[in-house]
Length: 414
Image (cartoon, helix red, strand yellow):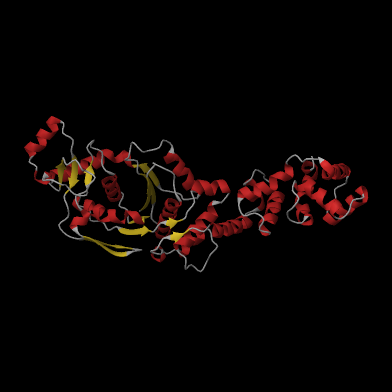
């Protein structure tokens, strides 16, 4: 089983999303279940509704899951496991004030049962620490290779806080063990926690094999909310994040199902990736161009293949690369026009002619009809006509746009 674990204490980041995508892909390649876990042990920092937002994002990117749960649901199990370690003398009560330290600063490990009972009776705050391992903990990271942690580095991690709440480290190790996670794929900054988690699982008697892969961060990455606001679509974002993860891939343009066939976790570079907006813009434009015309139009409030084809004119001429840019180009066609000034006077003339004109199939016939009826020609016709039809003085050629808006002419000029 693969898992994507995220704490509902802040927004999902680009790095988080890539972790989710890679876990999903590996699960699909191996035919293993994919689990989503909300690591909500930090009750103070948890943000209400953030877990629901995470699930909506995963759905938006078609990252389907087989199971989802909140870590807090297992709190009693975690506490029971911690107490078992205490009873087996693999853990000890610690009253040191600096409980953030990786090791106990006093002699708490030698505390007697009588002293422990006295602490509870007196209400003295204490935490529970796991005793340090006796040997170096080694594991092979799929991306970074062999990693060794001497006992002093692993230390004596706190497994229960002073309020008896399991620590995030302990809860994560327990849940990975309980879910029998085959491969932990997560951020590179967790690599230092891995020996501690291995130590916790070993102390609990877990004998299952767990592989690890720690992905380096993505530098200069925008927020996901920014990308959504600017109109980048999930297919393009997935495409780019997987390119950053497998930069030597022979394919540069692909969908998630296509990537499952060739993605190789071992090919993820050890060095941080650098996010380049221009590359994402190019991929976004390509994915929009590949979309069904009607489906494309629905991204900005229409449901007509003709409007999708109109949008693709702007994409093909690289005058737009995102959904928001397409909407900014297409919406003005259907927005109120200004008929002020000399330009407005000519627009009014053309509007009245078009209103009474028959349906003219080609732009050449349409233009010839306007020349004849208005007496305007050249720029005197082209500029006010463009403004009347598109609400702009620049853009793709009118003969390219006309086939896609001719059925909307009366609506456009109103």
